[in-house]
Image (tube, rainbow, N blue to C red; front, top):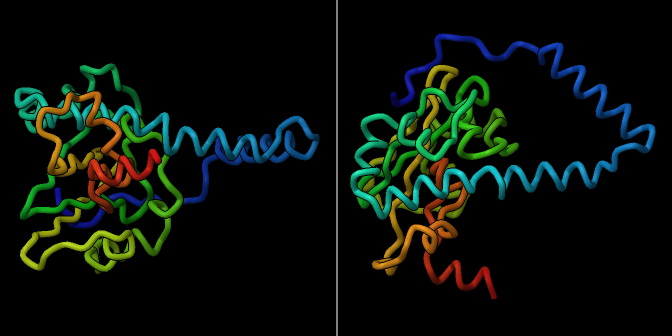
Length: 211
């Protein structure tokens, strides 16, 4: 549902497991058994490439398959699970669709609930207090900071994720992609467009990124 506040508190300190993992990581780095740069590279790869590739497949199929698009609207968890993308952090999914007059934006106001199964690791800014508060108070301002400007008549809807419900934005399909296959469309879909802070890439932007 759109933002109406949480009924649960996620501001407690890190769990014992999280603290132990952090301590183990620090110890391994200190002993020279783990290279921090390599570890950061692995995390970055999962966050920006491996994880979002799952979501890209979902979006591209929705763009090219009307029946699948309807299935996502009716039962997103089952439709996404058809790809084999299942597990914790993705049991109760809802897909919201952007269009010419509606733009959806996802946030988690009290923590960082996030659909790991389709987007990988949450970006640092998604977990930050400024994003969590300003996405609700000033969504257009937040979008502008990501380079996303919308016409005044576009309705911006903010969806507040919880531990019981997570959202995936289906960005508006870019113009000039008629006849493209799902595989051709996948590179146009970015992690940020599936959170809603940006739009999907245009064919021109994709071409420029490859050059």
